Length: 581
Image (cartoon, rainbow, N blue to C red; front, side, top):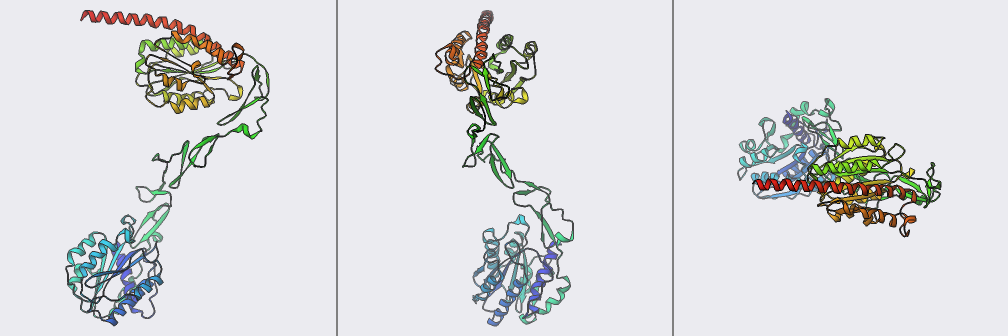
């Protein structure tokens, strides 16, 4: 049906063009976009005045076509013993330029190698490189062969190859043309694709029989096409296209945005935002996009000069908070300062639940956590505690805002189940920063000046990268302590720990060497307890930190003894098994 609708308008245009000389025939309707190549016989049998008629014939047809890059594209080749390209489908998109090129054709005046011309059209003229549109666009490819003689080479096989390649062939024979050759070249049905005219002067008589069938149906306007964006009419059919930045869905009608971020090659540091086939990089709140349009820099909100902090302004990713000088604490308005009062902390413990810890040691870790809870002043307005366990994945055992008493926390700790499997410390740090210390899970705003403490316990090398999230955690204002036992890697521990590193990490085969933390804490963090050479926190915060570490030491020493006893029992058991063997 599609070929029928295509054939009738196209041949009507050809025949009508010659019938109405010297005035071109009026176009009754739009034929739709085509890729059409005229293959013109310029052998010696075509006399000069006949070739001039052929030349006018081409020009009149083009005058009745809607030409353009998105409409019909036209190419012309002539042939005799050789093939010559006059202009290809991509050369001209204006009728005047095409007419000038046609008027400049010099006939070759040699033999009649029609098969060679068909081969040229298939292999070159109808290639994408020469301007033919891709087959999936469903733009009909049409070859109109006009000849007045018998081919001097074989046409049957090459014409079949061309038709199989999607080229629709019309064969127009004039005077001496061989009907069998025309039928061998043309597409089916033959009665719509083969025409034999006794002379150039009589070809106009064939136009009248097609007048009542001249118009093809514009399927986009005559039916409910269902295209979400654009309907493109082709003779006898239609297809849907999407707007730039969208792709056609498998139903052939609806469109979906092209996700340019999905391939992961965008290079955006924070967020990739897809938009109509392209993308833009976007920074998280509190960051500005750099000139490279990919990386981000934290905004220094304090530099705006409108913070009204009485003492110090500290910039953070989503704004700023005020901090008081040593000996002062922040008032309820978050800006003014008074004398210091005892402080509390938001504490998140991140414990290693990997396979290498082993069940009996994991129970000691849970005791360690509960003994820390025993000396904390746990309450909604005092110290808040959260617990995270990690192995190959990360699990929040309970957030900062879930329990309001030490007893409830200790009961929850005892119910924690050992995860086993891998050691994804980097993933755990990311989870701690993005979730555990969020206000949604109970962390208090920076404006309240409550210290945020992260304590990481691990016994082995991390199976993922820890650098990025250890850095981001410390940049966000979290004081990071880390305890490494057994096969823990000192380089990783140092990377997790806050500055000064020596006062924030410990590594040992057991817990006995942790006692040095308190002294270092007093000398380097709290000026009133030491030389005061490094002033990182106010006395209010130091008091909470020192108390936290002092009580922890006693717990660690107690656990060391228990661990040694358990190790001895395991060794005895192993010896007994060995002796029995």
